[in-house]
Image (cartoon, rainbow, N blue to C red):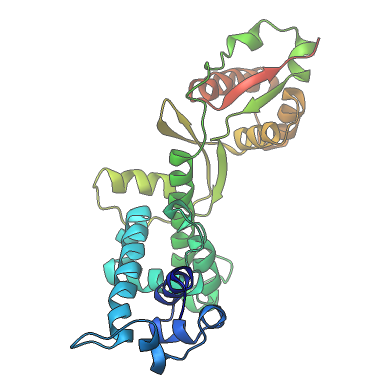
Length: 295
């Protein structure tokens, strides 16, 4: 006689197995709890008048995976649009088989989907015409999946809503020496992303129901964060990207600006004007939490 705890754990292991109920019963994890094979499943679950024990459990297994599939469709709507319903579902089912849900929360369900797409992409020579180094359709899909994943993580993750907004005017009151030695601590919601395609623009067009076409390859540098419970995105120049990257790494403002200098051809005065514009904009978008100002 099996205990209720054993039976529940066994059923969970069997029903959630990515290859199906019979494979779940025969799995090592299930046999550690109740050591039977699929032919003897009725020792644990009784059959009905019309269905065997395995068939009864398959109903729950199908419902479980149908729910997970619905969640992935909701989490990656632009990717689903790009691939089409049928092809998206094929990728999603393959993903759930290779990366079964292992968390108590559905928030983590799609966290490895971009990795799965990278691992299963066709060889570049087969998926693109021309240079073997050029970006192709598979690269676009991977970029788009990464973008939607990060967008959802920023939307649901920690932010600064409970704290006072950082005021960039604090920096204007500093001496030049203090300013270059100041460190800016960024919002926990801030992410920097580098893509081969303009997926942020594509995603925005999709949300406006403009039915966007596959874009041409184009390096895209994006900052994404959240302010007042709204996700904010900003396309960056290479110099702006380098500054924010250095600040995220904990470097001083002076070191961050120095790191960006090779990425701009503006003379000092024009670059200074651009820096002021950027820092005001970044503060408005909630990129910064507070400043550590030296004495």
